[in-house]
Image 1 (cartoon, helix red, strand yellow):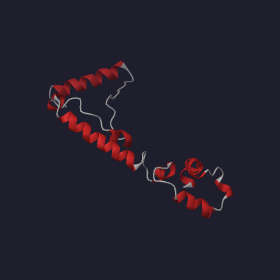
Image 2 (cartoon, one colour):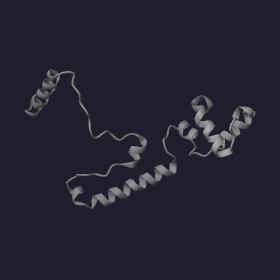
Image 3 (tube, one colour):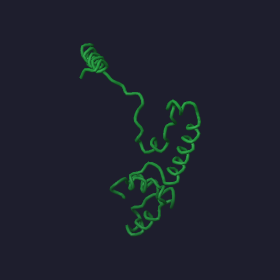
Image 4 (cartoon, helix red, strand yellow):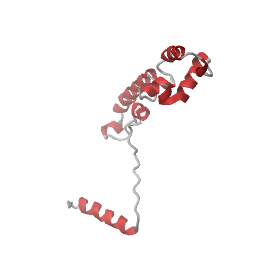
Length: 125
C-alpha cells in the first residue's frame, strides 16, 4: 500500500485512526490498521482501481435505470433523442466525449479532409 500511494494511506490513517506519523509504529500494527480501513478509503479504492465506492456506484446505477425508465415514456424516446447520460459511465470514465474536436495543420489539410468527407457522401471511398 505504501508503495502504491503513500499519501493516500497517510490521509486514511490520519482520518480514521488519528495516526499522523505511521513510521513511529511497528510495521505489523500499521498493516493491521491498513487492513481495517473501509472499502471506501482512498487507498483501498486505489488498490481496486475504482474511483468511487460500491454504494455510490449502486446508487448511480439505480439513478441510471430510473432515468432511462422515465425517458422511455417520452416523445424523445420515440425518436431516440436526448437519451439520458449514464452516471455510472461518467464515474468510470468510460463516457465518450460528445464533442470531438478536429484540428488541421493548414488550410490544405482542411480542404483534403473536407473532400474525403464529400466523396464518402457520394458513395466514394
